Image: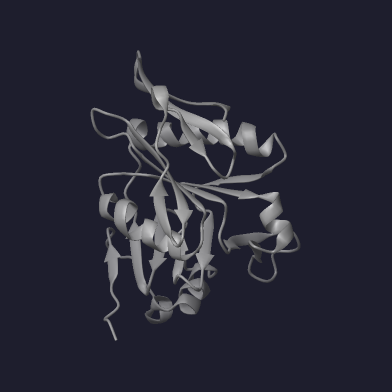
Length: 230
């Protein structure tokens, strides 16, 4: 059996011994001792902790632009819900419990039972939920300096195993802004090839998107997620 380990980027964080199993991790995640800040993921028996702050203009601003557009299309369009930060997605089959940068779950997936709302710890009352269980419709990951390998290799493999049909990966750290959409095909992600002028179709949402970046004095960058009918 492979040795389980924790990747910890913060001193003085105490992880319970049983947190290296799927059930043990969720007991910890629902306890009062679970940290209120940072991103803590469970990946195949390993616990990965990142307490570092987000870069304002290569991460936070990008996430805001995407959430604004998806909120308009999905939430205001009454198609489903969009969650950002600290929103846990879990899959026992994939041994996965993560907090993606952005999560989209369509109402049809909840109604069919394909995705289940996990009730919050007892005592918090009705209509309180702590996680989404099952293959949500779309996740977005924005690459940071400390998450390159995780976002580009480990997470896509586990998201595919969990059956999540669509993954967006964004990397705004370099000279060229990278915005990629992947669609799950036969258990693995395939790149949705962009068309003219950078438009990429989202199979789950049925529209095309492109992510733009421009200088916006006094801010270093301003991002816009545009969409159009496919």
